[in-house]
Amino acid sequence: MISILVDTNVILRLLLEDDVEMSVSATSLFESAEAGEVSLNLDPLIVGECCDVLQGRVYQLKRKTIVSSLIPILVHNGVNCTHLLVVLDALEMYVEQGLDFADAYLIALARNGDYKIATFDKRMQNDDGLFHHLN
Image 1 (cartoon, rainbow, N blue to C red):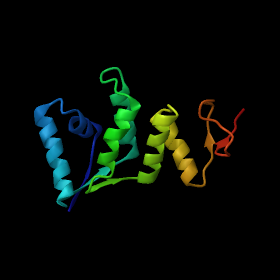
Image 2 (cartoon, rainbow, N blue to C red):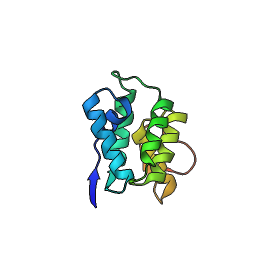
Image 3 (cartoon, rainbow, N blue to C red):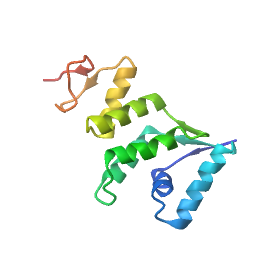
Image 4 (cartoon, rainbow, N blue to C red):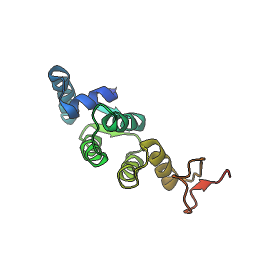
């Protein structure tokens, strides 16, 4: 079985259906994954880029809408997402705490591993022991 890395623009076409030809191709790719013909791989970097693009000035989607659209893709049959549970935790923080996906992902990684985070970003820092305070 062929293993395919999925780029942001494929997910965007799948979700937005704003280019008929590309949307059909993206849908077909995910159908092939569901049928077990290919294995699709999503990196957390791509998930973060999807959040940034969909929330940005062109599409201006609400965070909750973005996450509710991305989760079915992340758990779709034939799709593998690196660190899926961490990504899902990060998406929850992205919505509920209003953090950028990258910041939320770092916090989720720290929660799920033996890590501390070094940052100057006061919005990220809290008192739950995840942060290595630089100041």
